[in-house]
Length: 456
Image (cartoon, rainbow, N blue to C red):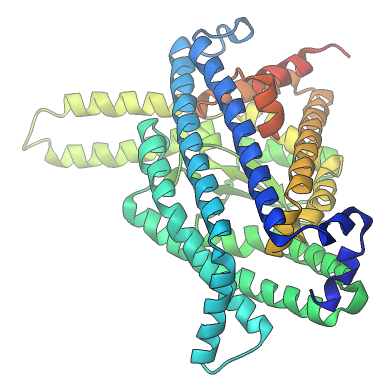
């Protein structure tokens, strides 16, 4: 153990580890991982029982969600739950095998051999090579699961919009971008540990904090556009309404974008980013009802033009036009109205008004600084407890943001938007309470509707 870590081993909570053998620590780490796996699988079984037994729309949503949509959501969530259980079982077996076979030390040794072969040396460089190797292994191991999730589960339920070529290009691009960002960060972390002296952990915390703020700033502006197309929201009613809401709340809105998430998935979302007086709002095109309509109309005009050109050669275009009209109607039914989009944003701006973003940054600092692999394993009980507490805090923030929107007069519209988003994304509205408390950073739909309905 190097001198830099003496402060850690002097902590009273870790004095016991000095008297415990390495083998005992290894088995304790594996045992804790297995306990967490069994617990989460128990919760998954509880939720699957809910999905199997609750087959009718709850009374609170009667008339708001159709039985057909409810059944689609039920089957989709069952499919996802079974997939997650299989993947979690594989991960616990794979990770346990890696620990028992000392794969990490072997990869560290391989990194050293690579450096010597290249005529290089140094712990910082070796750490970067080590992280590159682990990233490659992690990507390769996770690729089959990602493929099945995208082209089987999501495809089966109508959410996947990617081709195989798009998927592969996207994964390669993500891997390269991840290495360009993460390797310099790893190098700086190792340097800080080496040169920071007895108080290196304070410098490391400060560095992690600055890096997090930096990434939160540059990701939407420079990295996200590498993967999706961002266009300014056109002038019109929706833009005017959003700008009016921002002005009312003194939200320093500088730019307003629509991202073409529909090329990747049919799921919808909205978020804001930026610091101080430089805020941006991003809306997924799948969130916007009018955007879907315009897209459908544009495509329809192209098809109508093509059909007119062929009319002299064929008279059987009626069926095709009827099908196109039906598809347009279906597209129009998706997404939220302008007022509902504004209601959703009133919730998001509630997070800004109550400083939830900065509170979350402070909360995740201990996890961010746990980049050293050994600490991640040894402190697994702490990390698990912290995650549960952070999840509970996040749910509290969501309720507060809903109440913020309610105070602005958007309660009815926010409820309608939440129901529509649940329907469009095939989210199941009924959850086992234990399962939801453990997994969900956002409260389930019925709890949010009940809170919005409650009279102050």
